[in-house]
Length: 236
Image (cartoon, rainbow, N blue to C red; front, side):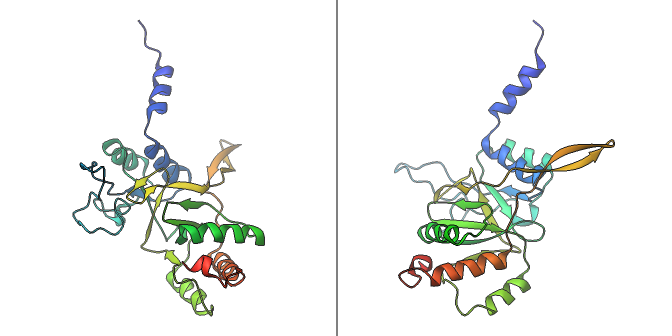
């Protein structure tokens, strides 16, 4: 019987692991450098899963690079396919900074409160990554010097606010880590731009829109100060 190649290709795409699809989207469509996270060990007799790294006291189980290291992050689709073909359930780790997105993160409860407050303020937000323990607001790339200037200009910022900038990383959906499932609380906008190919305009995927870190930091501080209980919803 003659093989129907088109159907075979569609089946392969449909069966492709979700992590590989997500990693390829980041790397090829959005030009976000990614690499596989270390992942989790198989469940033990109590059903618990520790980090697959050598550190038995790992503070972020499954949610960090190990081998390869962070500097290996790439947008090369061949490398991405090789990594996730060999480790299909590996977390998708974004190397933040440089030309890639950065992020500000808060504990989950504070993050949910912050988003609600920013929505009431009419603040336009970009993608938001949520885990059971922390929520991360993606922002446009910034340098450590710019971040220092922004923090110096503030009288106070929530003590639990973390910054994922140059040399940092962030786990992206649909990964699973020791903290639980990673998901999009606010999914990236699927946008496209026109590019001339052979003299004709062709729509191609573009990176999701990202807000400026200064605007998000100012809004977070304002939202914290305007909270009814003096800001404790955003501080813990």
